Image 1 (cartoon, rainbow, N blue to C red):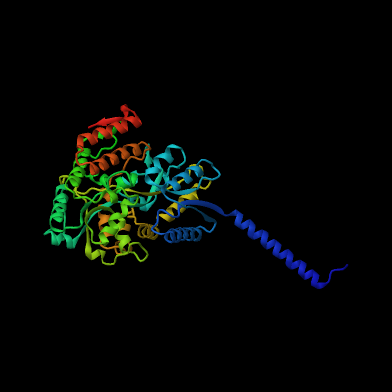
Image 2 (cartoon, rainbow, N blue to C red):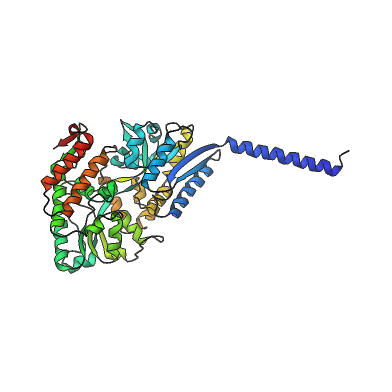
Length: 454
């Protein structure tokens, strides 16, 4: 049957569409796809913030590099879920994400497994890298090479209720110089302001390594000897520094200056001070930098607009005021590139986009971080997001010390957590007994030849 003009037109249009479809498909397939894996429910303050930040990263990268595109790989769940999922993904070349967000304590595990790519050549020309404090540059360094870079840090400060200080005859503009100054203030609160917790310090095992990071780990870093692992690689279980920390904890709880055991051993212990402060039930706390942001954010829990007028913030001093006079832990999240990536150049370009100023300030504000690049911490977009808290957290950041990024650290950490928890629960327990128990636990888990006394 002969084709009519209408038939010919229809066939021509169909052929044209087919050619266009093939052309579009071929174009899409020619794009370089860079995979980015991240915690979608744990790291940021809300899931919406996480989605917004990573969508922004993808949009910025896709626009800057139209020949490539980002494929997001969200990982739901908590800290352990993220580690377990990434471990599974990295075991196969076909599933390993080109770029991944990793918690600092897990970097050693992933690097020693051969899963991460050294980034030294690329970092040599990255302007933001030179602004990282040396301690933060070191958090992803192993055997002389850098395998991961910070995308946000947590540090700690002292928070205190100004009205309670005034009631107790203490200065509202408080600047403790030693640990004794902290205890003296707590004693005055107990004597003059009944019905409140004088001093919060996270102890015990309920919060794991995170509790140590936000609690007694800060004191150890400000002690006379903050050594955790000595030059020979052995784990320090008895030192002047450890004894100073344990003596401080024993003094707190022997004098009833601390919080109730039910709060201390709650699974959510690290966030207890946020609520206690807001309820007017807490005078002083060793707490993390995210406190201020949680109180003052538009989307937060618990929001507390009056916090800046009510709660002061100051650096944690060293034990006797010795240099540098400021103590804090460091811990955060890092970005790493897979050793098996097929797109090394674009993986680096993606990491570089994520380290841009606006991205890092948004991450800091939405996830409760301090940006690693020092110029970013001075930006009004960061400082004015949660005044005065963000400014102080930026001030103390360069003084932070890192914990060893090794699997054995968890054993040592748990031993110190147990020691502080036992001192809080048992007033008759001595520091010598706490040290002995700590030494026994670490030696039993790692071997007696792996422990050291200083």
